[in-house]
Length: 169
Image 1 (tube, rainbow, N blue to C red):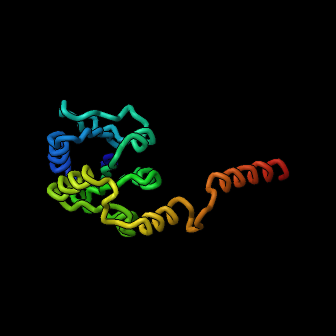
Image 2 (cartoon, helix red, strand yellow):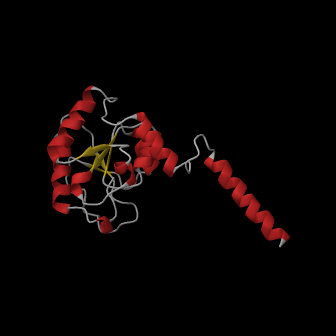
Image 3 (cartoon, rainbow, N blue to C red):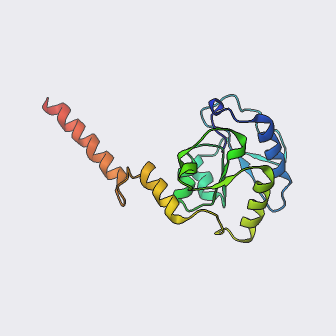
């Protein structure tokens, strides 16, 4: 999952990383450029990699054993589904909340990425971040710091309340 062009991703290293993924035995990598970006049309020009730009992000998160993220909020979906989330920090100089909270596997270079993927092939649960870090991130981003909150129910009540108020004013 690539991020927006404004995030200033190192394109040369990204291409190198994609080549590395294509060469790894036992890895079926699907590459999805940022959904609202038109500048990444040629991101997947290696015939050994699958372009997943036509696949819904939620479907990819459901299908994937591991998610590689370059600063995209899609990591939230992966973490909610309990998928190992590898954050390719080495591709840019930005800072993210999931990085600050330690809710992902922060990858610092291509060698570390390769080793992480090989490690996860052997044991998909062996990640260097804890459930408590993920829970804190999800509490902050999804549940508004209210554990166990039914966000959709709250949203529905808000909309109904707004609609009711509009009719009474």
